[in-house]
Length: 511
Image 1 (tube, rainbow, N blue to C red):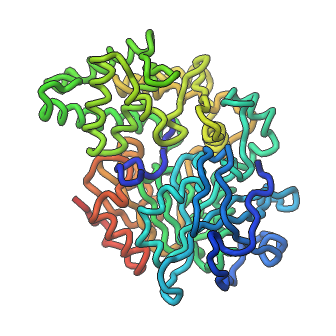
Image 2 (cartoon, one colour; image 1 turned 60 degrees about the vertical axis):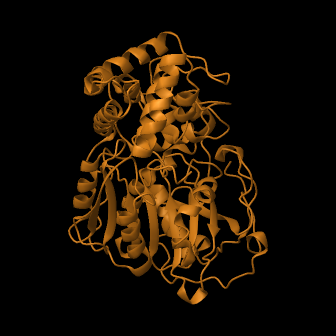
Image 3 (cartoon, rainbow, N blue to C red; image 1 turned 30 degrees about the vertical axis):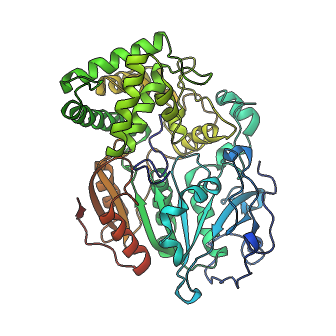
């Protein structure tokens, strides 16, 4: 199971390394604007990538298959391709093409701050496909910033990782199809791509909004380039003090607690609550449902059936939405319990990110791609490039027992992730992310106390690890994974920080 999922989970408001998009004028007939120039190129990057390169923007094509297909984003959107070293440690070894997208600031040019780069989570989500979907939530920021996103390494059009012909087929297939890429798709390499983007976009400092996994990427950038940090927002942060397996254990505990809160609400609110009139019945009822679905998956209104693990992930995704997801979850559980059909749960099982697409196969926690995108392959490749954990059988089985014991509802489904990088063909970079950023300006960390995916305790650890006078914690007393733009207080604080440069007082709480 993913430790992180993309933006939008917290509320319902958010609804080949080939050449990629080429460019000339602005998208949708927009007039060309004089591009700003930065004076601080990334250290150690050859001039061919900096002085010898400019971003050439043009109208965006329809999303590539590896970006999950769809329609072209339309007027106002521009796309470009950035050349980056395959390996920043040896930049002469080869290049990759990084796909980018932007929407120019809608307000007066004299009030424009610069570019605001986004990563919406994953790892494995296409920013080129995602930003047009989420941009309405950031419209007020888009008056003074160019909104910019990109496909991280291994994702979409940026050196896409392939682990099979049509679906994820395991680590051997990853090595066969993408072995030359796998050592270079980790977060630290993508963070260096961010600094090259910053420079080519003409910004002296990086302004950035990262959600969930995007906070790990933002923290890695701040660690590598503290002097180039501008205004960074890290929302629904990962815990940089935990390794991958510790993170899985913390997450399964958090999602169980979120389910317990939902069950109490259900019992207090509905006479016919599907999890029972007594919250203590909830675990037993849902565990019995999941066991039944594992033995005999439920039909849906499509060709795919709902099995127990898909149902568990669907429940988790409803909880990610926050209290707005509780009513729909009641209806989804009632459908499968009373009518024996699982359409509503199946729809939510694939609702957010690669982590929601977990399908245990051969007992090794393999992921199965369910659409044309490469999100699952990218999720596995980036996770295993970052993490150096390769647990042996004894250690893995012990962790599986701990995860299963931590949550009666979600433990079995979540435990399949233990073997994720078990036979990965390359070593991972480290056990835990390095995010210390001494010398950086204040970085805003935003966290919900009821987050079921990135538990609130991790936000405090992120603030501590960023360093004294760097990390600033904004606590939001709310359910769900992420709060912007759902919570007015948090949204005002984030906007004030990004637009005016004023961070809230450390320890500020939004209720």
